[in-house]
Amino acid sequence: MGVKADTLKVLEKTKFPKNTGRTNNLRKGQTFSRSMVLGKVRLFYGKGLANSKFNKQYPELLQVARRLLKSHDPKYRFQAVTVNKNHASARHTDKYNRGPSYIIGLGNYTGGELVFEEGPYKGTHNIKNRWLKFKGDTPHYVKPFKGTRYTLVYYHWA
Image (cartoon, rainbow, N blue to C red; front, side):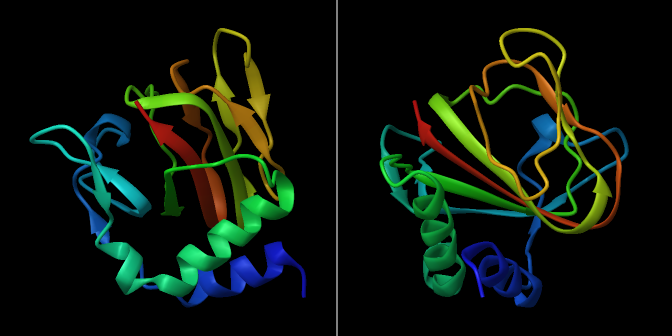
C-alpha cells in the first residue's frame, strides 16, 4: 500500500470528535465540525504552544500524517495539522497561520474543491489526492461535495 492509502485507512477507522470551537469557518446553521488539531496547539490565554491532547489519543493518525507530508515534501516542517472529516468550510482566513500551508483531500467523494476568490491562488483547486501549497491569509472556502471527504491541513502558528 502507498502512503496515501495507508493514511486513508487510518482516517476511516478514526472516530472524529465534535469540534465546536472553529466558528470562523462554519457555514450558516452549523454548530460543529468533525475535526482535530494534532501536533502543537496555540495557547489561547497566554503565549506559546503546547502539545495537542489528541496526540496521545490518536498517535497512529499523527504518525501517518507526518509520513504523508514527508513523502511529498521532506523539507517542510509543520507545527500542526488540522484533520477534518466531511467539513465544507465557509469563507474564512486562517488568521494565526504563518507562512505557507499544505492541504490534501483524501476519501471517496466528488466535489469539495478549495476556492480562492482573489490573490495569488485565485481559482478553484481540486485537492482530491493532490497537494496544494498556499497561504491561508487569503480568504478561501470549500465547495459542496458528496461522499466521505477527509482533509489534512499542515501549517505553522504565528
